[in-house]
Length: 177
Image 1: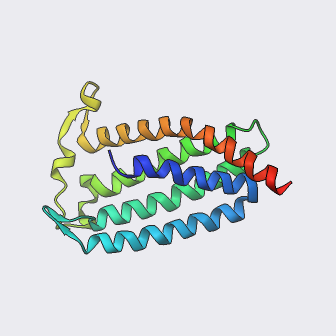
Image 2: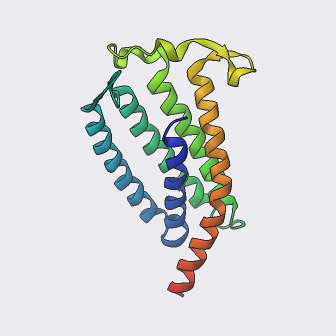
């Protein structure tokens, strides 16, 4: 699993709370601030060398940044369209769709052999080994299995995040009113 499987649900929670309480414009500002912070961290990470090379490859940095920005802005737009329904629909649907887009973009850019030209020195052959999906399904590249597992964790955390979403929004709106 990636670090994003555990941290991105928090990012969706923050943007959804901002969207519910302050509107889509404020939520987009939070997304852009998070994106710039992520870009800075990724650039630093590409300069730190670990046992097997850079801690963050250019493909991982590019995939992470594009996936974050695209998925978060999509989340804000979907949330804003669904905001008038029952309280849980907007955060749940926007987060599930945003997480799916984030996961698909990140893993494709970071590990798919079709994008090897992005960073030729980064050998991702290991991620393209054909294995049974999640160890028991149809045969797929390893990175696809990793992406599905990553998304399942995000799905579970999206469901759990409904609790703090409801509590935080209630707390903020009670104070404001």
